[in-house]
Structure formats: structure tokens, C-alpha cells
Image 1 (cartoon, one colour):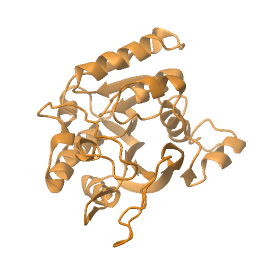
Image 2 (cartoon, rainbow, N blue to C red):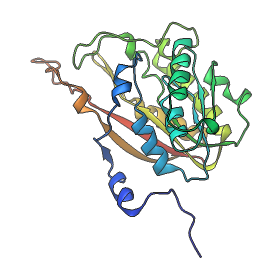
Image 3 (spheres, helix red, strand yellow):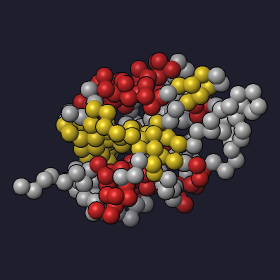
Image 4 (spheres, helix red, strand yellow):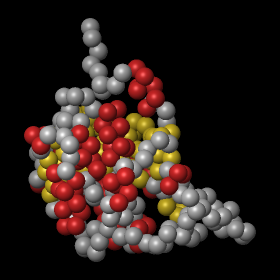
Length: 262
């Protein structure tokens, strides 16, 4: 009896991508020119979709679409991308990127200017084959970056913007609401991959990856695995944080949390 395939990778790619630390992800030349505060590289989404979907898995969801990288990756792999985004500027950016895509247009896409906490009112239950997303890193983009001193960047001032929530527990609750919706629209045995990073605010450390994982399991997801996304090549001006009074770590990695719906 032939076993059902997990993806379309050959043995060589399977071995290469199964390493738990990915340090070769790069933004394209076009992506580095885009005006988005937290660019999610298309290369990263493409690889995740190659690992966690088959050719027959067609419908890809990103509830925090941003600059449209997940929808771009879906189209390039012959899939149908569905995104949610609040900021009109980024919706127009996503549409422009998709229209310039070399992939033929018949794959289609949807981009909804709506709060992802309400996506179940737009997307049919049990209709999504994979979710890949990068939610706001709390309100961290509203602050100067401590690792290299770069100025603050922001998603926008919409009241529904989760990145404007100042209270950490309220932020986690809002994320939980989004992923409750995702759980309902995702098909059984399909994956939801979430890109997050842990956060420090002065003396307080917030382990966002583990806090979110707990809430995802509470929703009903299986916590399947973690990939470390090593981004050290993007930080070329690191400083000795806390020197000399307290030793602090420069966070140059992020987490790709892999969840599965039973």
C-alpha cells in the first residue's frame, strides 16, 4: 500500500529542509525595496508551503497578509492565496506585487480589508489547506530597536491593529481570537505555521513563542514542532546590550511554530 505523501519534495530537498535551524533565507532584491515595517520573505513562505503541503493542497490563508508574501508564494506554487489586511497601503502593495508576478493569473487570490478576528464570517469552515502567517510582534515596532538602534517602524494607527495593543495579555487574547477563527476554517490534519519572536522590554522578558503555543493548544491545535529562523545576517551593527551592568542577549532569531489541526 502506497503511503500518502506529506509533500512533493525529493529526498535531497527533504534532508536539507529538515534541519531545525534555517539560516539561508534571504529577501529578494525587490523585497528589500518595499516599504513595509516587517517584511516576511517570500522565500520563507515558499519553503514552508513546499514542506507542509502537497500539490493538491490549494487554498492558503494568511490572516496578517502585510506585504503579501504568503499570497505571492501561493501563486508561484500554483495555489490560491487568501489574505486579510487592515492597511490600505499594504493591500495595494500586495495587489501590485501579485499583478507583476510571472505566474499566470488563473490561480487567483483574495485580499480582504477586514479584521482577522472575524474571518470566519468570510471564509467557509474546513476549507483551508494551510495557514502561514506572521502576526505583529506585539507593539514592538512602535519602539526603537535595541539590538542595532534602528528607528521605530509601525503598521498603522487603525483601532483594530493588534500591534497597537499595549497590554501583553490583551494582545495574546486578540491573537487567540484570530487563531480560533483559523482553527475553524482549516481542514483536519492540515498545518498552521506562525512566525513569532520573543520580546524584551527593559527588565521584562516576554516569551511570546511559548505563550502563544499554550494558547494555540488551548484552541485545539497540536503543537507539532519548531523551526528556528536565523536572521543574524540582517544585523550588521549589533551592540553590547546591557554592558557593563547586566548581560543581555541580542535576539537575531525568530520562531516558526508548527501547529496541526487534529
